[in-house]
Amino acid sequence: MTELLSIGDFSKMTFLSVKALRHYHDVGLLAPAQIDPHSGYRYYRPQQVGDAQLIRRLRELDLPVEAVRRVVAAPDPAVRDAIIAEHLDRMTEQLRRTQDTVDSLRRILQDDQPALEVTTVTEPEVSALVVRERVTADAAMAWWVDTFTALHRRLRLNHGQRTGPDGVVFPTEYFTEGVADLVAYLPVAPGTRGAEQIAGGALAVTSYDGPFVDLDHAYGVLGRSVTERAVAADGPVRERYLPRGAAADLLDHTTLVCWPVGD
Image (cartoon, rainbow, N blue to C red; front, side, top):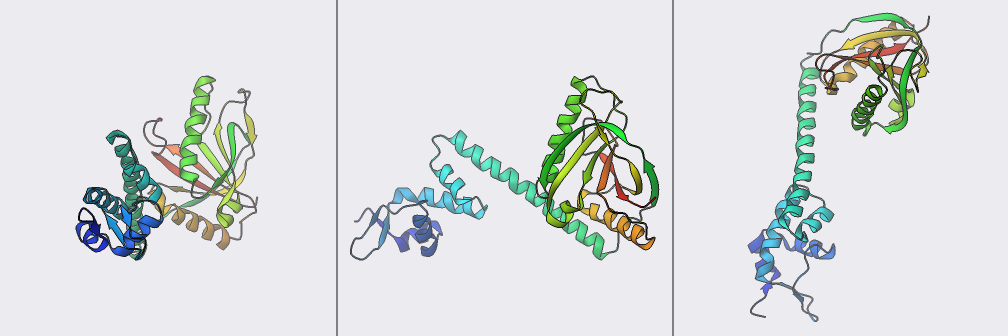
């Protein structure tokens, strides 16, 4: 027994509370070296201190328990480091999004949103390479990047000719339910192999050139405009994406938000 540590001493050496140690035992993350069959007291070996300290640091980084288990059981440092690096990348992205939201909130509180002009246009029907897929709002950004990367590759392979900016059609269900069948399209010359027709129509349009987190500002301005003029019509909203810089950089674009209106 002299080679074992009481749960109290182990707690002091690892900065893990007794409650946390019991929880990690219950979920199979850090089992005691021995449990007294009569008292139920848990005992740990000094060699477990390193694992316990590692577990505490990983949990402080909000690494899920299952991922912590894989780190502790990793057969070599490369596997362990890859799991941690993947989680750190997710945390970095989460931190970036949080900062973007904080900046956006400051702009709202300071009434620092840009003034946007609304115009009305009539878009013709166009031939386009099309992807239709059911997409949730949470997955929309990743879907957007993957889909247009694939559409651009498809255009190159077919030696097709682009005739307009990329676009996505968003049914009302996407906004009300958080999931809908989205239509991504890349306008091409008529007769292009695999092209489909995308309907045109009368649209109220505003141009938005700011951070994605503030895109709802453009929707708000556009919605108020068509409502105040009593010209709003049923139908999906669409976005068009005008490249600003290198064509290869999908995210470097100006967004045209297009709201259906009555003729």
